[in-house]
Amino acid sequence: MSYKSQISTALAAAMLLFTAADPVTHGSALAQSPDANKPAVSAKPAADVQHSAVGTVNAIDREKGTVTISHGAVATAQWPAMTMMFKLANPAAVPADVVAGQKVAFQFTIQSGMSATVTSIKKAE
Image (cartoon, rainbow, N blue to C red; front, side, top):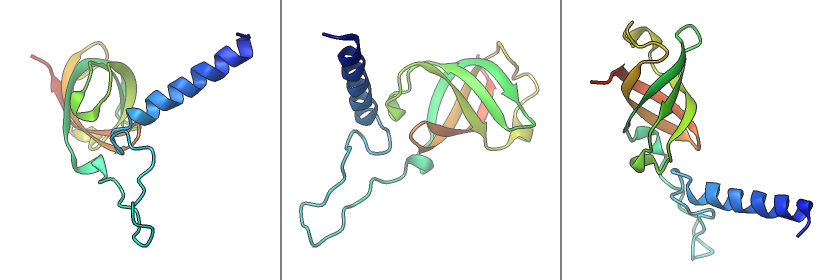
């Protein structure tokens, strides 16, 4: 198999995995109605669902309202362990002891795909 076809195969597999793991559509790449006369029912936005996780703060920018956290797997969001940047719902409410290198427990909502907002964060015990 040529290098180009290996890359194409890997990209196709990655896209399939990403679509299957999308917490908004719950793996349904196409939300189609079986009745052509009725509109498709869209998946309920996950923004009202609170998810909980534990992780380590890599960076926090209270002025920009962002925090980067390396967190464990989040089953309720169908996310594997990863490092990602979150928006902070209320940067002023983040405790002063939440700093880079600190282990934290946090709650968040998902707006779409990998766009998420931390609604609560504190030092993990």
